Image 1 (tube, rainbow, N blue to C red):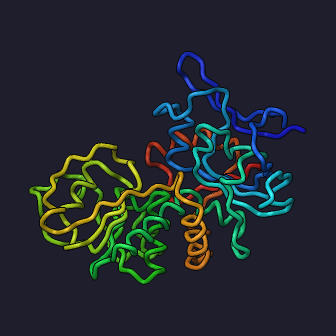
Image 2 (cartoon, one colour; image 1 turned 45 degrees about the horizontal axis):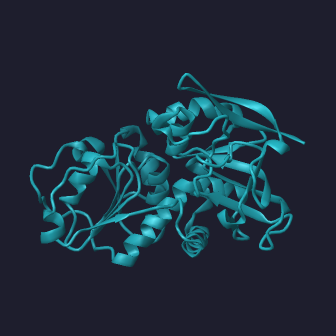
Image 3 (cartoon, helix red, strand yellow; image 1 turned 135 degrees about the vertical axis):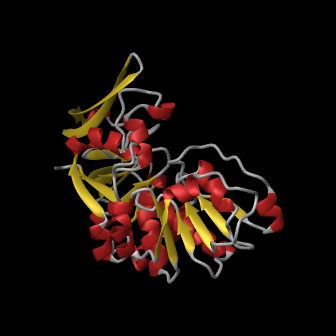
Length: 327
């Protein structure tokens, strides 16, 4: 049988993406074959589609770091034909062929069964970005969230949009930082009670400590923004670092950690344990407002993926983008 997929090829270090037909026999090894319904677009997908960071070493390659779909064949006793599943992480789309295709073959260890009330489309409206947001929120809660507003940086992006909504749904006051003033109404609709300009946080902090502002923070930006935010955290508050849209460097001092007991917490959604994933997906199912989720989501087809990979790196993609692999 044949199936459509976005295939990456490399020639003289230039990566090209195009939609093509592949044979089932070309699929990599794995115990479970999934007929994919939807994939999605994440910042890392943009990097992979454009050959940034050498995340992919072997070409030709099918990208797409997450997908949802239905099991069509299984040699793993945990899954049977007809099971609805979601996959995020495990370096699928990087080392292993991914979700920008109508079919995938993967390890059963990488799959999570979808909650009965969460559709395959909704699962990809959430995707890796939403899972990362939930993991960040749960980690902040595990360490204790202060009484002040919780800041979300990169708030109009995929991780940020879902984080704003989840925090609001959980009852927290949310401050959303963005460099796109035109998204203010969008962020307010997601649940943000105040908007903070990107420029305000992108400037280096004037000193090692500033006035205490934030009871917690989910940071998807990194670099100078993260360094600035650390100086403004309340005593004992935590920052969950889960992105590097602004850069991977971090130039700071130990003063916020020593004098205010600030916690800098790393969030990994790639190889986090199954139990952690299951807990996160269950809470996502519980908290997500489906109408709001729909409003932050745009649907595209496989042929749109190559251009969108460049757009997301340029900061031109708002909210979540779901890829209907059969469109």
